[in-house]
Image (cartoon, rainbow, N blue to C red):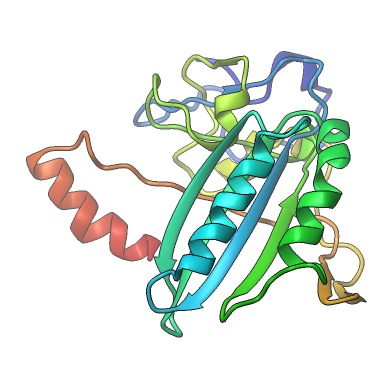
Length: 236
């Protein structure tokens, strides 16, 4: 059993964890371990929103962003997800990952202009971008099994052994290195900036953003029944 906080980011605590030192989680979980040289990660979401099934123009737009990923400075890994939202629109989101902010900053402007700028060809669909670049002191991951990295964890150097900070209220906060000394209270005011054809939303500091994926493919019988009837409806 080890701490979810990597050794090189541990510091003298001024704020204590929500569990005692001898706490034993009821099941194993693991976290991604980045190289100590990684200071910040980047997760860039390129979204398309359309009514009904994606048109040929939407398919071409998604193929175009995938082609951008192959350019110099592109992401190490990317995923794609699709869902129908509460208003009935189909959303297709392509998510790209970097562990080098400078590399991303050099790559991003051209991709951004083609996706949400004045050059964008809008043929009956909308586009949006959400870019997150938390420092490693302000972000955490959690996995219930080894051998199947997802998302930003694909870029990690390794996975941890079983970690202690999970399966209790406040466990996510305790996995964030910054929580050792900071309350992480909201600071500042969210605001919007008009940038040509774009409207940029700048959140306040210490906003909590959660990106969660669930794969129940390995479950069977009772465990699958419990997931589909008790867990999945709550997640939705």
